[in-house]
Image (cartoon, rainbow over all chains, first blue to last red; front, top):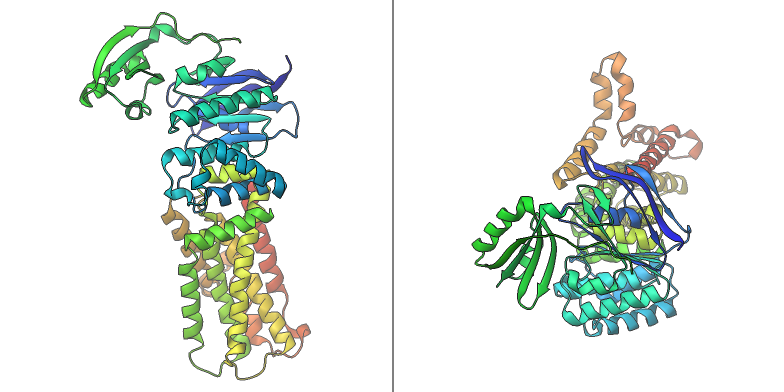
Length: 281
Length: 234
């Protein structure tokens, strides 16, 4: 399979802090690739490097062509925009050089698909978090992207929109796009992911993570939004009113303490023998 | 690029960040021309300096409009940093030109001058407004939120630099001979004041051109440095 993106010896430093250390990997075309890892492991940084938004401190990234279109959905889409979704998407599409007629048709289709039609003339800063996230997703889909990069795309989306996004990802893949994403809601996106990479301490591994240093905490009566940004949380699964938290051994006590403090109830704590393997579809 | 300009200008209007520089500018103009008649060359020399400050203010406000993530998205859509920032500078230049035209036309329309504005005086004065606006934009671009982490550093650094640039002549007088050339580093905002005061306004050939050219070179250098720094910034 032909490589669509190739990262060679990528290192990224912010001041003295090395966020990514000698990353080497390649992504074949027409694949859905997931990058997983705890908070602060450099997932978003790596996505920004692939999107070309930031430059690596050393190493290089090669694309199959210089003419590729990249769609990027940031983890935190700006919420204080003074435009309506209609105006905003129209500007973004026009900046990307999409002809007016095509752009209007595309916008209409995407706004309907993501059930944003009724909010299209309300300013973005007045919309709910989920609807703002939808605008963030739609702007990345305006030009048919050769590479679609999604940083925590399901965060804040309602169930229907999450499913709609999954369908869109599948559709894009069927039409030849490469999709790179990060997520916490593993159980939802797993079915569409072809290959998973794990980022640990700035290094990338395509096989399993350091199992001995991980634990699974099963928590009752707790909303995912509370734990999402805690340090040491590697993965979250929302299963029938229970949260499955995959956490680093190092942070497990601290996380348990926080859960109890927030009146959450701990159903089970267990070491993980075999965590998610890098999967080839 | 056209859409980056349109987006930025519309966002600027909706943000209402235009109000502080606009109200200050109108107030300054009205107060400055509260007595009449006024000398043409001297008055325009002063309003050009006002444009230096106002354009710097406009530039800082414009470059602070987009959050870092929105900037990243626009750079992706616009096809690169150059397209994005050239669009931003064009939007600032258009806004600054509207202010400049007001500064130029207001005293003429309301009969604030003691004499008619001749073609040569009008041309030089208008050019001086544009040059100093460009200088203000160049200076402010380096103090924008793109490089500065805090608003205090951004506006504070800019205010300090503008203040220092107004004291160039005084500094030149007090500096020891061996340090006098240091004033060339300071933005040449008041460099055109002296040639304008010494000009009789008759012909374009008897005005000293170098200060105008130097302002253009200096502002161009600053804007070039801005683009180099932006390119390096990851």
